Length: 211
Image 1 (tube, rainbow, N blue to C red):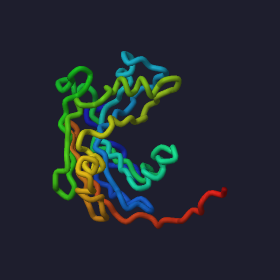
Image 2: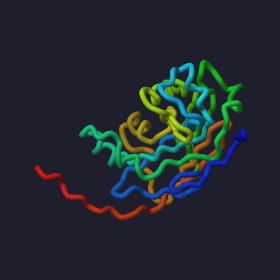
Image 3: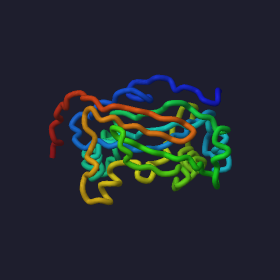
Image 4: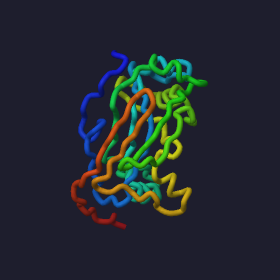
């Protein structure tokens, strides 16, 4: 594998594609993360074994319909449709050897920033991850397989989503994303992704559950 390998184009997914507004969503958000991509299969890996199964890293935008997510999570469903419209990956898969000089105690000191329509919203360093990538992989592989192409997100960086800022400020400022907004994310050593929100498919109503 090359040190910088371009990601394969996939619907709803790469560095300059448009992203549709989720049906029924009025509170669209982004999440700035770095994804680790599994390169070789492994089963029930220890933390010490896990990093040997990494192919590389890329930027991940975990698009989030906060209003849908909030309704679903109140009944214990997890995020479900709140996370189901798009996940952006790109612009390249960067191999582990590229980050040797950034490594600090099993984490990588890479600057991360996110912008909406050219205005900086927030950012952090990847070194502030709660768990290392090796720890994430070890947990994901407990009693099961991780396989080539599997992707695990780092978790949203500090200041890397609107919902965090709304919680700090007590109101929705900056406002939720709207059609026409462009979200740009940059991670040191990986590059940048840019995605514009476009109109999505119609909302088809589903009747309430029988009681």
